[in-house]
Length: 61
Image (tube, rainbow, N blue to C red; front, side, top):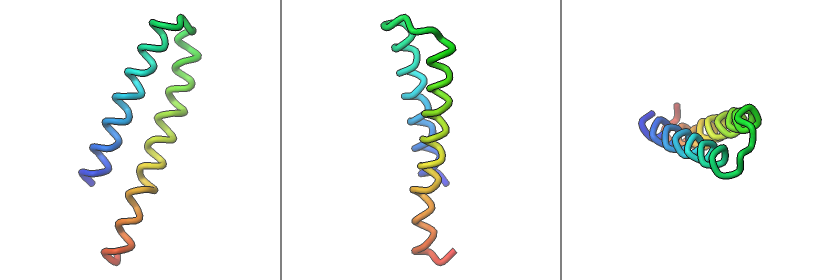
């Protein structure tokens, strides 16, 4: 649980920082960046859950 939480939080923080920098540097509309940020957050969390789920095979749960 802790591994999944830590991995998820760091990916979300980095995604938010990337979105902030892209808005400031490129001048792209905030709405466009927000839509892509939702996609990035969803992919990061779903892939993190699937990636961490393989540990359950070894403990027999």
